[in-house]
Image (cartoon, rainbow, N blue to C red; front, side, top):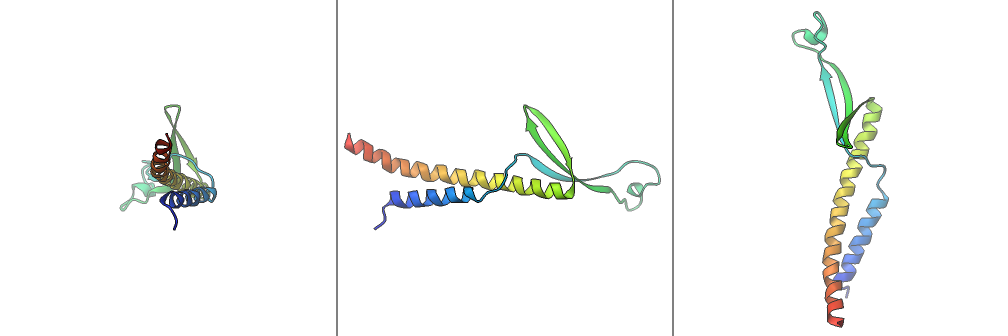
Length: 115
């Protein structure tokens, strides 16, 4: 019969292997913007308005300041993947912490019983 501790260890190793499969990560957010220029006669001022864009932007806080970068559509796809990878990594690490806490309780009880 497999012990609870062994199940926790197996689950933990499985989570570690999920981290191995992650690609690059980056924090921040990606937005798609469409704008109006305000020039009379421009299509963005028509009825109905046809805005300019889409424009892709990534923004992030660096040393307390917001950094924004305009991206091409291809770059935006990479950033979207990296941001998704980071969110996945955070979820996996949260699960690892939960499994570690449960396994830790079992290990601590074993140490206390030996003392």
